Image (tube, rainbow, N blue to C red; front, top):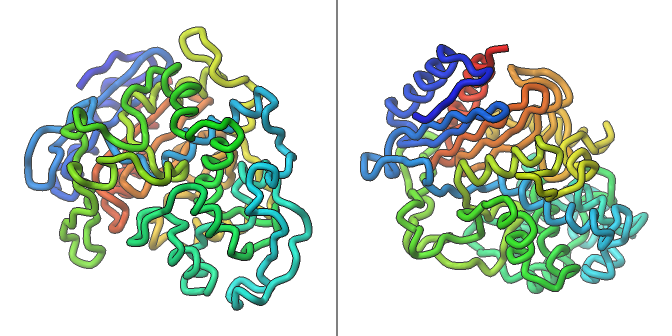
Length: 409
């Protein structure tokens, strides 16, 4: 444990440590690393082991697959382009993404792919940033022709069919109709991956190169990227996907020779990053500092405000609310925040211990990352257990409940 207290109570931090320790001692979470900061004070805890059943201990510099917690970070690349007026919110995306010109839209969500009408308008940058461009992962319509087509074409990550390189990914995406009219409805995942292609085409640089030059290097995020180099691979634990019925641990991804051991064909802004608690702390603290880090401006204050406040209309948000409320057997209650900014959730009502205004997201690989402007708090919890079973989601909930009790004033 490393801590210094400024508005964090010693008894509250002790409770937090005990709560997390129970999860590790139960055997359901082999290990975890967590960071809690308030203002200039930081508390870090590493518990348990890298592997199920033993092995090296978790350390502060252990690297984790960030899964969907990549979204709040990767979106910063687009905000740089908005700040520099190289993109505008209501620009059409067609000049850079011609594959998305002349869209057609399904007549009904469960209908055949040939039953379409013309899109009412073209897709804009704003549609992509708010995840409302018309295609996404919709867990409420699994088994429909359009969802089957998304999976079969390798347009979503972490499935047996790997995602192809960006130009081929765009070609396949362009073959499909939209599920909804542009700007009509919030949908998950695909917008975040599309954003990386857009940034690469606008800048003429690989997405990771632009992220590294403009976000990672200025923030000192030396352990963040889309793969883990050979000299760091011993810092990456296996990723487990427990059996939902039996709880038996299955290895979903090994470090050596696994999915993150080589640069990917598709650097996925929606879920491809690996990182550490300290790297993510630097990023979320920059957001709380309204775009600055160590005296250097990374993003403009208005850009940060756009990212971290709700951008959805009630109509757009209806699908997000339904996904969170009606799929709790999948999300285990995570995702019920109310709103969505650019690339991240934003709390618009108080449904648990976290206040209105908290922003961030969770990842299916066992990561939870949020910042809270009201309390000047950043909280990061990283594990190696995916959300195929409730184990890591239960840790998320208990972490945030205990964290807010540790705030002393």
